[in-house]
Length: 422
Ligand SMILES: Cc1cc2nc3c(=O)[nH]c(=O)nc-3n(C[C@H](O)[C@H](O)[C@H](O)COP(=O)(O)OP(=O)(O)OC[C@H]3O[C@@H](n4cnc5c(N)ncnc54)[C@H](O)[C@@H]3O)c2cc1C
Image 1 (cartoon, helix red, strand yellow):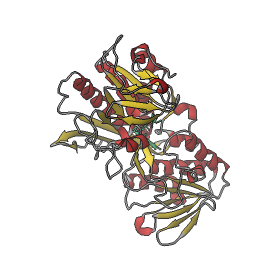
Image 2 (cartoon, rainbow, N blue to C red):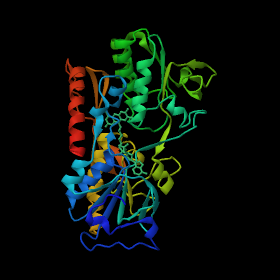
Image 3 (cartoon, rainbow, N blue to C red):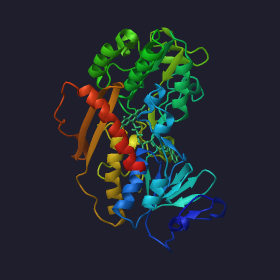
Image 4 (cartoon, rainbow, N blue to C red):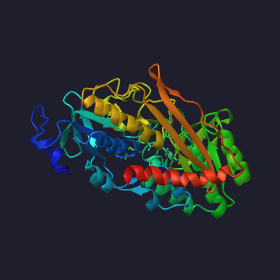
């Protein structure tokens, strides 16, 4: 049986015992029950803020992992600048401080008609509203040969955890003089500048530990986020260690061979890496796709005021899975969206109108080196039914701006993870 609080006990139906349409019972607690799928930045935040918004709403958070490793600062781990423990967060405080039922399991299907989620093992949970924040899924085989099995040899490390450790181990065991190939993803993907931060921190590791090694970046795009700032940092810190081939210079990989560690580009060039960090094209998380929440783009269209799916009623989608452009797919925006979603869901459950003019913040730091940071900040609002960027914040670049941003990155991480996980 799953771990559930008494309040939600009546809403869980053991798979074997379930018959017909389950009834939402409310003998001991609230008549309103929100199920949140995914305990990452978006899901854990929305669970907390729902309970703060309205303590009479029962919240069940479903997340398979007992320990959540954050993608932010995972490239530090890859580069040997931090340990896995430093990016690990548990759910005890969320559970206790906010009286949230945290169920460590995976949602395998959703029945929107009957408002039931089914968990691995067969347990089923009723909801009044469902909130999904399942992160990203990968477009396996979009590039020939890059399958899930290939990712065990050429890790993407784009979800933090075993993939992070694998890439770190590979870099450690590589001989000095080896070629590291990094291939950033095309299209819309999780965290625009993160592949370039990854490249930077790998370069920092190589400079320290394997100075005869080089990094080749095969990029299917022509330009990338904060390009000039990264380029300037690479020139300053790593001189000729990083070579980047954009789309126009044959940067697009069309085939990989995990057996030979080779990547073939559009114009037929073959590159052999000692370590290959291949980051594939992305889409909404598997459960969002499977539920029918994504459109042809592979991401989930939403109402910008409530984040309710425009395809399926009573299900809200936030974080990386949601189509919320031009907002970046980042931990900070997922957390910012969660506060808006919590307000909207609480209002809808009371049959009230959600606040009509939500606003969102985005704040992100990328490290080009341990003491060389780049700050990226923005605000967003809803205008004429779509997300619109606000005024860019004034630039305050002093003489030590890069060092200050690197220090602020650490406080940023501490603050956001303490806010969510306690
Ligand atoms: C290398 C890297 C560095 C980054 N650095 C930064 C940064 O510095 N700043 C920043 O703001 N952002 C950063 N990001 C982006 C940030 O990690 C994501 O935008 C953020 O995690 C999105 O939150 P989310 O809730 O959508 O997904 P996640 O945080 O990934 O959470 C999704 C959760 O859903 C769970 N889940 C999935 N399917 C199911 C299911 N069927 N049932 C139950 N649970 C399920 C997963 O286990 C997971 O825990 C970085 C990303 C990467 C890859």
